[in-house]
Image 1 (cartoon, rainbow, N blue to C red):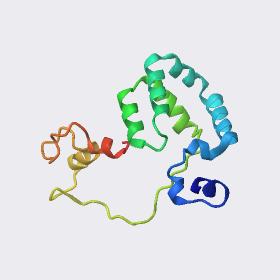
Image 2 (cartoon, rainbow, N blue to C red):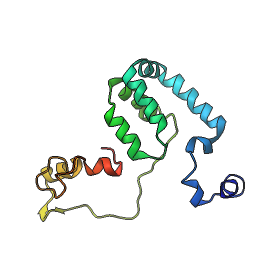
Image 3 (cartoon, helix red, strand yellow):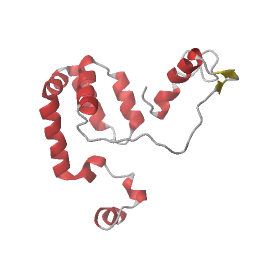
Length: 156
């Protein structure tokens, strides 16, 4: 019932997070995005789909829920190929085929980190924060076989 209210009456936050974004956009917008992808990135799409490893990665990405950033990230880092990189770069960054918009938040105002592990943040400390916990002997979680970035779905 809430799905119908969300679709026909007014948005419901509790339902919005459970709807597949492709379904919510509707057929017309999905077709527009597909046309933009083929017009702008035809050669990259053809190269990606003709490479067996890249095609397998795309199939695996299609099997993951669109809102599951961690699952998507794991598929991508496990199946990196030059064709997948070109495919993604063309569709997502060079041509923004999905018309994504993620403005930089201005609030809350978070102060710049000046200390880390009791010392001023220098280039080495910044590098360790950026990379995560893998192979960092000073980290309490260095025994874990994953980086914090993969667990939370953050992309460098």
